[in-house]
Length: 338
Image 1: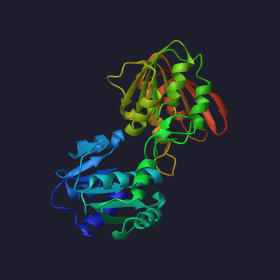
Image 2 (image 1 turned 90 degrees about the horizontal axis):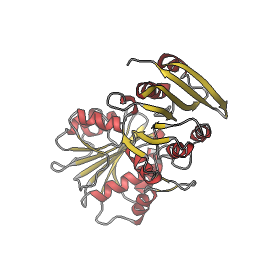
Image 3 (image 1 turned 135 degrees about the vertical axis):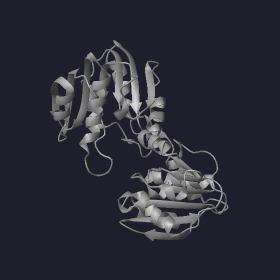
Image 4 (image 1 turned 60 degrees about the horizontal axis):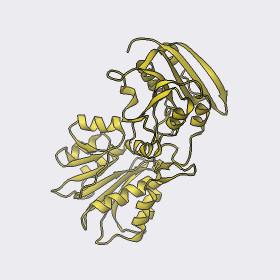
């Protein structure tokens, strides 16, 4: 059952009473029936993923990458990052008035059962509902927040990782440099020039490598759908040749000046299962924004079947290396169309 459906069941059954006035914040909001039950007039959606953010806006909801203003109630949808989840709960509590309602919704695979126990040990739960391998629980903000909530907030703040770069919990490879990016960076020297695009740039390490790879590089544009990751990239990549774009890579095309080179370490899953179509969308985007003489360089997990997409979108491609579970692919002469 999708998160929003589980939440909709709780709202429709009046398991808890939403306030009759004032804005209701929904952190990590996604489209679904729960949003319709509250309505766009009162709901403030927080969503930092560009494609999900834009879809909510198209549906008439007020949406922001990060909410800062006080609210009457808050809903938190869990992610797979424990520290991010606790941090979002702490932020929501800080925006609520005394006795303000906070509702938390998540699946077992997102650790909702453990999280409910840990939150309940610090702040008494008012109620909970279990359904379809997940749980919704709710509580009220006390007059003063316990020290544990401050610790949750601090643990979710941006900080330097083991490699010395700014990251924050919940973004890709927050703990350190991704091994795939390391392999791609190894082959960049001498291959880049002019204007370069980094698709799915994350917190910026691969773009840093591109800027250092060749003195002929004039500019590197970082395209990243997760606004929180892009903010970390701004801290990490201070070279004046860098440009930052909060963008859904799959929608790139018209209005983007053509590039001499495109590099990418594309995502390949949203949940546990691999979704090769995510990487295929990056290949499509690279073909659309490359100059006819440009080159596309990407790293991928060895088993992911991107070769057919490369055949369809480029006249020539080759496998530059294949080791350690990764493959480095190079493509040239993009095909026109789409």
